[in-house]
Image (cartoon, rainbow, N blue to C red):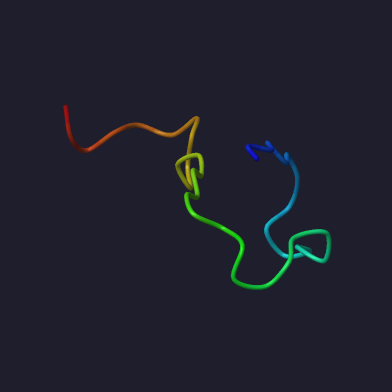
Length: 37
């Protein structure tokens, strides 16, 4: 089953242990200047 959960990574109580196969996060400083192309 594929499920998308949007929220804060500090509180992952709704995610079962050993159940994540892929994790996608946004850049730490999304609105800041980039040092790479």
